[in-house]
Image (cartoon, rainbow, N blue to C red; front, side, top):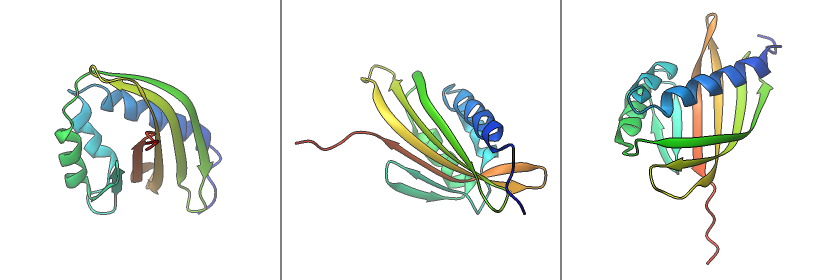
Length: 130
């Protein structure tokens, strides 16, 4: 495969769709459709998870209901297999918690005329400064 020339539009579109679903607690379970049953990986705050069913378990275990999110940057790069690498920098606030900076990285892999999320790494940008 070749580099996908629409990588920026694909990256921004994916991020818009992903966060619209994630930030609505009633829609969050539908995110499972973006992952592959066996080939997808998620690392959530250091916890490694593989497969759509396990990722869904993790998403359903999140207890917060309200999210306020501000995206600072969405950077995308084409991959030589036709996929797209996406890095997100932002700030979020969950329920009554204080706002925190975060970063999230996605790798979209082509499947037919579409993509699935093969890799998803999320980390709050909290540093141990003690």
